[in-house]
Length: 460
Image 1 (spheres, rainbow, N blue to C red):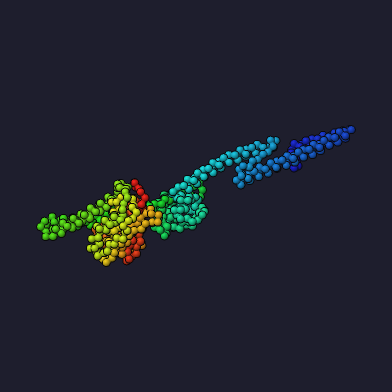
Image 2: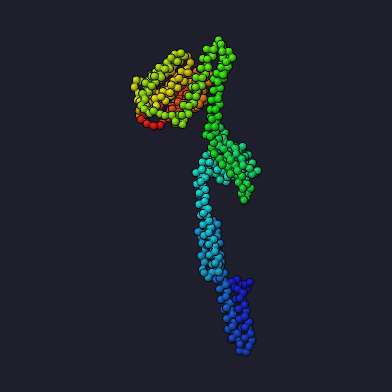
């Protein structure tokens, strides 16, 4: 309740009292001078109070402006701004309180920043992908693993709708089910152009204080696991199939002989039973050898091996088989090659499998040729087995080293093969730290090149 800008109530009251007193004195005889003095004091008092009020108003206004500017700087993120007022300023205690609040905010902000950095570090280092969605299915948070797993090219996917970054309606439907029903859903995702990649997605509801429930998606690459499971299932099925045929033959012929011991074809039946039993024995032997190679439990006798002599011995053993099929088996290896380091028995089995396969898949009138290569540094020696056989389709080249995989199943079974030869070759090569290269054209033949190290090695 001010009488004039900057003039407080008690200032107005003082002026009124002095003015009233001056008027009363001036009514007295000879009181004009005293009354004038009182009137002058009243005006001086009023002017002084008015000036003091204006000064206080100006100081208060400056303090308010400073407080407002400081709050604006805090809102802009500058929490280091402070308010400094005179101790006599009535707003000084408020300024001290605001400065304390700023210090607390700075500490809390620093803690939140550290927590955010830790969270980002954890998320970026995770192998699993993490995506957090809002209730409207927009991305709130995503880590690098998720961008890699879902092949997201968008540099900043936050705030984008899911279908804008992952074009899969099945995944979108799963997330909508989670946000609308509050249930956890597990589903698989694969790129449209590559079914061999499988990403397992576990989506759970994420309850938020505002905007309705969102969802958190945890993704992991299970391609290798699914492939291993598929290979395991195929392996069991293949072993069962490979054993079923000889067992059926043995069982049928045995029952026939038991029913009629004097059966005139008894010798032939016994011969077939023996062949099928040998076939089963070879299969079991190959399975055991493959298992020992995979688990590195097979003892390896490391020594210098003369591959020229090794190949010469194998050619001697297989020349008769090649001649029976009307094939030419040509050994073009030079008399002297650098020795390689390895186990002679395992290397012999490796080359025996390759050469026998070449003979097996080459029709009558064809040829199997053996020659060698030496790399310029002299650190690797290659044995090349080339045939003019049926060849391997390009679509099968990546699978020929799988267990029981056959390009021509009828021909392989007719020759008594187990379907494990090339799988064994692959593991022997890996055990010797070598490599194998394959080139093939359907109808023209195949070429297998085995590279072996000349460096001395004492253990696998």
